[in-house]
Image (cartoon, rainbow, N blue to C red; front, side, top):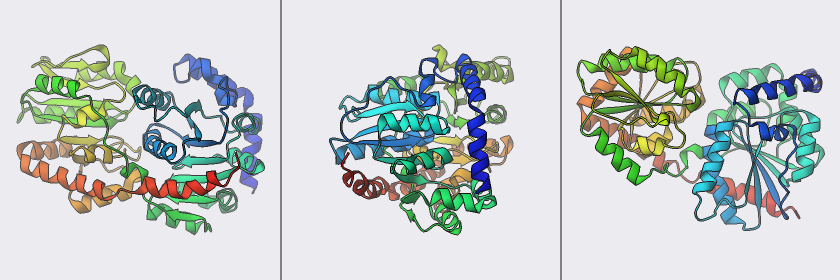
Length: 434
């Protein structure tokens, strides 16, 4: 338990440095200055009457996966309220946008807060205000002081859609006593795959259930039909492919692949959607410098539109992948040519895209393994192999459609996870008097 005590000591002593870091992050636009108090468990939002559930989704992917589950929970109980905490500005913007689009008011009982940082006084203040009867944390974020504070207040703890990467598993193995102590505080660890379940069990835990992956049970991303029609007319009959959720270092490789493809497809249009749209201005300058002298880049966040001369369309906006997955039949999934661990390919697969990815897919190994087994995805190693795969698929529409159909079939077969999760959650909130 020495590791846990050391962590708590560091967290206790770090308060001034954390406060300074928060202010600096706010100045750089990486935090919302007006809501910095939420990072210390302080809020201006009143607690609603009745039962409150606390759900936590660290970032963008977890947020997208949990929002449909939240709708299911609200459908199951019309009296519940949910406080959803997230750790990034982008994820907060996603929640705000989804609430704005929610004409049926399905998310009316959803309250967003930035997650309090892991110091006992801050999490204690958060819990004292919201008084949740249940805490469910999505995927892999397990903060020791959160766990201990919830246990001290007799709040039921659950992991939802749990994922334990090889790297995290190796870290837990170095401190097995602390790992088992913290993870055994959870009433249930809902693993998203067998690999995670086996890793948790090997740590000595018996509170593990494998329910499937929420990301495989999400509805198709929405896409504005008017915008799709407008863009389809602008693209015309040009060959189009999309590099989605790219990370720093990958866009240069995408641009190099674009160059290689121009010999065979001189009117090629390459779409690039960075995982973090706030990189857009810097990326636009970088990519424009890599284009041929006559090449044109259009930047969507700046109102750029596609003309016959546009070679790269930079999609540095939020919430529009549902539009562009419907316009590009070939998608390279980012975060995989650099050692990030990959990005979730199921949203593209669900919208009939043939999938390509790099070697770094540790965050989604089982999904990609299944996609490969079904013939729905191919591996590329670099710009040259990426260009070769895109060339093959552009030149052979039948192969592309077959590949896309196999990916969509696999994703379609993986439904039902949300219903299983709700069924296991229900006794926790119904068994509490609120």
